[in-house]
Image (cartoon, rainbow, N blue to C red; front, side, top):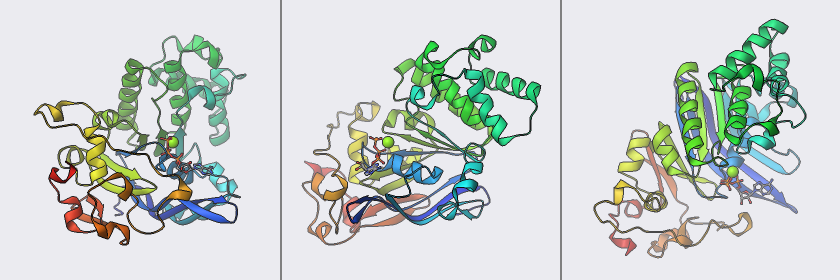
Length: 335
Ligand SMILES: Nc1ncnc2c1ncn2[C@@H]1O[C@H](COP(=O)(O)OP(=O)(O)OP(=O)(O)O)[C@@H](O)[C@H]1O
Ligand SMILES: [Mg+2]
């Protein structure tokens, strides 16, 4: 739902990839919004369409093999209709993306200084001295020690955690209102992960930006996010404020995801339920009925011919289901 604070509003988005003459949707009928000052987490197993959604928002998909339907509104502008020139102006200035692999997103033959400066040259009219000051300020902001020294170095001379800080500095260079972070900590070891997440949270508070944080790690979500959307096979199956999602998950997929992380939720001796099977590939998705049906043995018969829809069961809490009983179970059916 759009409010005055809405930064991004995605409406009924389909993103299909072409295989031969046919398109298969990796993102299907996704509606989601991001507000100023908010960290929205998108979670789900590998292959459920998280990066496809992010890539569509930032306009980096391959236009020849990708079909986009629906709307992605930013300041009233529908990004799905934007030409490449305008998108280039927006990217890095209004919307920035932080990718999983810091080495892959940095240029190996350019100094750290040049890489951060590049975005300032493209998007601002700052002079040499002002750009130097801004780069220094950014390196300080992302917690890089000895920034004057680091700015003269090349990516391979830095540790993974330091490289990811540089990537974040580049993303922040022009103070974009929207930042999309696609698994920003997956490639890093656990202590560095925590530092980077703290950093992103601090930055979000300082800049009042909205962040879309993509991850398959629910621990990361609990630590960082305000709101969570759970994706399965290209669809949002549940969306809720973070505390609601962790205390009152409704969709069986969300419950299974939560059950697969060992944590205090299980102190009462509740059994861990692990989801059987894997996300189906695009070409093998059921064309009709519930996309999750093959992973849950007790699923009702209606799941095979009814397309489940997203119900808003409480303000801000949406669950995809075939019938009310589908997500009103208390867990016994899983035995
Ligand atoms: N360029 C592409 N062409 C064809 N199929 C693609 C393309 N990119 C992704 N896919 C398919 O789309 C589906 C969603 O992939 P996506 O990368 O968005 O998942 P993800 O949730 O980001 O997974 P991960 O957690 O592994 O990053 C998968 O079935 C994937 O194989
Ligand atoms: Mg991905």
